[in-house]
Image (cartoon, rainbow, N blue to C red; front, side, top):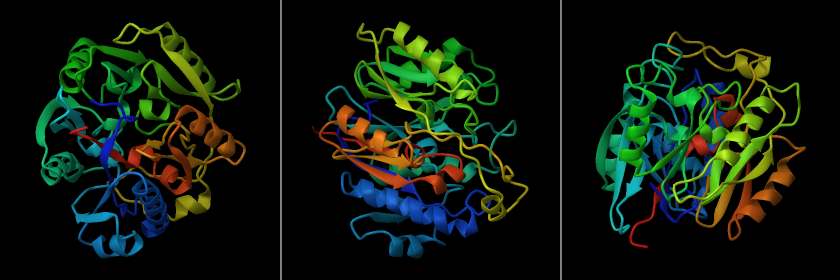
Amino acid sequence: MPAEFEPHDGCYLVWPERTDTWRLGAKPAQEAFAAVATAISTSDPTTVLASSRQWEHARALLPPEIRVVEMTSDDAWARDTGPTFVVDSTRSERRGVDWVFNAWGGLEGGLFFPWANDDLVAAKVCELSGSRRYRAPLVLEGGSIHVDGEGTCLTTAECLLNRNRNPAQSKDEIEGHLRSYLGVDRVIWLPLGVPFDETDGHVDNLACYLAPGRVMLTWCEDPANPLREVSYEARRVLEASVDAQGRSLEVVLVPAPSIPSMTAEEAAGIDRTLGAKPRTGGDPLAASYINFYIGNAAVVFPLIDPRHDDLVQELLARELPGRRPVGVPAREILLGGGGIHCITQQVPAVGV
């Protein structure tokens, strides 16, 4: 699996419309998704997958250079339902890993039911992109892994070892699947993800690779914030780890935003159904600046806290030279339970 900072041939997103996830008929979320897709399209060829009900509306909101393809899904998290693309040793062929998807926990803490359409998204995207497919024997979401492209994978024990994912498999067995399907030699296990994360602690809200041997980590100094202990322990593990190439890891800290919460007004705009987790005013939101998309020419990051947005933009410009930092308001995405990285899936380049 190539690292996300390596060249891309494209990016996929899925159009939001689920009214028990997205408020006010998903219209505010659709505007946010359109802004993210438009920003990415200036850097990477971009495809948006939309249902038959929403295809015309998505087409009307998106610029003409973005391809809009009709596809059925249950919700709009391309990172977790789309394929994880891998390439061969000569980078001449690309294939897709199709993980089992159970809506972040199935009937033990999952976020909605049913999820069968989402479990088919990866297979459909592989067909659409002309990529051969591996169906992996593992419940896993793409947001739960980050790789350096040189044999090392970051993940969290909170997510991959959660009993609502693969209860019959041991840690060694799960790690064996990561090695086999991602082509990695070393797995670094961080204990926990960001507090209040509905995904059971996806690593893409906590840490990511900027370059081989260089990891960005969300950081909190506030002793009243439960993230402080999580970020301190993650830093300890990272700085004590060696990657697949024998390198010690350099950790770059990015400030954590304050913990936002859903307002009563926002919650009132979300439909309540038997098939989805109820959302109420006061619910804390797992905001993180780590949840960004690295494109060929731009890094699209969330604007979520005016106290830190400019600092994060400067930090990304310094740490990812040659890429233009583009901030996009992301609260509407956050209200649905994720961030910019969660709604995107890069397609690594071949023939380069």
